[in-house]
Image 1 (cartoon, rainbow, N blue to C red):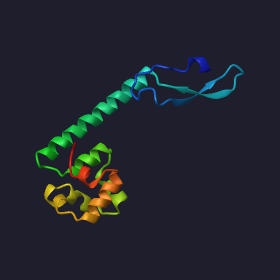
Image 2 (tube, rainbow, N blue to C red; image 1 turned 120 degrees about the vertical axis):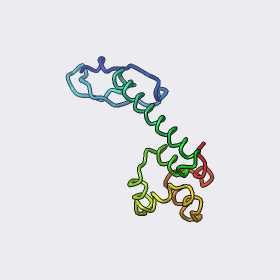
Image 3 (tube, helix red, strand yellow; image 1 turned 180 degrees about the horizontal axis):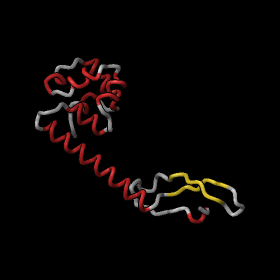
Image 4 (tube, rainbow, N blue to C red; image 1 turned 60 degrees about the horizontal axis):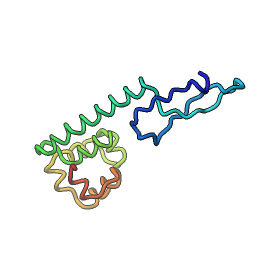
Length: 132
């Protein structure tokens, strides 16, 4: 594709703050990098993906509010993490992280474990205990 043909279909997904580098051919026939704000098919797919992620986060939040899961599940989903990934970051077994997804077990966690979870999830301990 030529430099002047690089799509610039801005969907305002990222408020124009991000521009993706694309390779294009310039006037002298050489490849060059041109920044693009996106193109419609890609923007539509990205929006659908983010909508799906937000739906899953809200479903987990509802389960936390019902007392079926601990707030840790909400923060995992919000950060698009699964048990295996969080366990890896924490240096815990998957079994241990699964136990902490139970509200009763989560509420009994000591300060050191809460601090480690908070650090990995980039939240404060108070935020870790909430879903807002």
